[in-house]
Amino acid sequence: ASGLEPHMVKTKADNKVELDMGTYDGQQVAGVREGAGLCTYKNGNEYEGDWKANKRHGKGTMKYSSGANYDGEWVEGERSGHGVMQYNNGSSYEGQWLRDLKHGYGRFQFATGASYTGQWWEGKM
Image (tube, rainbow, N blue to C red):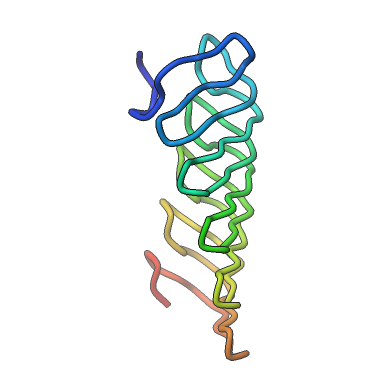
């Protein structure tokens, strides 16, 4: 079916979608993730937030199994817009994202206490 990610396998009557990589519990339209939902992946990652056409889209939070956490905006499955990333080593970034990269104005706080505030271009200061 069009718009389905490769790991989606079937829809159950109780509004849960079984994935080879985990489960999805949330709103759907004709078997497509649309609206609010929670996806728990077998690798331990967990995304809760908005979906559009089976992709993370809108506001949401991804809790990574590594201990990192991203809370912010998503566009077509990628971090894009304003977001806050807390890394498992104690550092953090708050600012603009584009296609899963820091891009635009943002502030990176290093675990050492040092920080950089300014423009980012495709993930680089």
